[in-house]
Image (tube, rainbow, N blue to C red):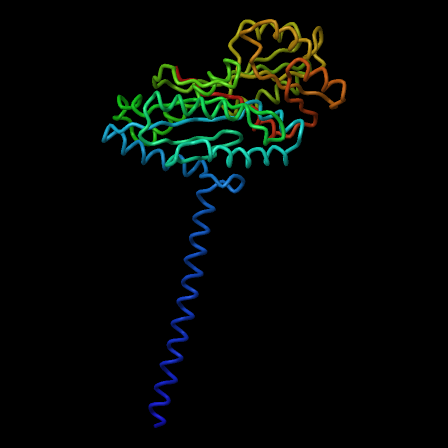
Length: 337
C-alpha cells in the first residue's frame, strides 16, 4: 500500500514539475517574442524600424525581381519638421511623429507595410501596385495630411514614389547594393518634391547608378580658428567644404556654387548672416538652400529676424558637435542622377 502511495506522490510531484516547466517555458517564449518585437519596431511609433526595413526590402526585391512582380515603395517625409521641434519642443515633436504614424496606418491600403526610417521620414511598401494606383494613394495621403487637424500644428508631407518594375533592369546588382540604390532613389525623389515647394508627390526622375557625391557645405565665419576647426571636423565626415570670412565673400560663393547647406556666423563683416539670407531670398534657385545661423546668444530679436527670413535653425555657442553633425547629416544628400 505504501509503495502505491509513494508512486502516486512521485507522479503528482513530477506533474507539478512539468507544469512549472511549461509555465517557465511559456514565460520565456513570451519574453523572446517581446524582445524580437523591440528589436524590429520603433519604440516611439510602434512601426517597423529602419534596420528591419532594409532586411525586408531586400527580401521583397529578391522575390519581385525573380518573378517580375510589381509593387510600390513610398518615402513619406513631414515637411519642415524642424520647425515643430523649434517652436513647440521635442515632446510635441515626438507626439507628432507618434500621432502621424497612427494616422498614416489608416490612410494606406490593407496589406501595406509601414516603417519609420529616421527623424520624420516614413516608408510604405504596397504589394502588387501599379503606377496609376500608387500615384492615387500618394496623392490621397498628401491631401489627407494637409487637411488633418489632429496635430499640434498644420503639417504637410512630401512623397517620393518608386515602382519596383523600374528596377527590373538592375537585377544583376548584388542584393545589398540594390537596397542602397532603391533607398537613395526614393530619397532623391523626396528631395525633388521638397524642392518644388513641399507638399508634393514625385514619381519621376532618371534612375542611374552613380558614385555618391559629397554634400557641399558653405562655412562663413570671420574667426579663422573657429572656421578651420569646423571645416576640419566636417571634412573628416566626408563633406565638401567652402569657406568664407566675410558676408560679401559668402554671398559670392553662394551665387556661384551648387550648395547643399549654409552654416553662417551672425556677425560677419560687411554683411551679417541674416542680411545674406535676405539677399539670397531674391534668387528662386537659392531660396531653398537650408540655412543654419550660429550666434553667441539666442536673443529674441535675433530669432525674430532669422525666422522672418526663413532661417529655421539657430544654434548658440558653445556648439554641441553631436547636434551639429546630426543637423548637417539630415540636410546632406546623396545625388542620384
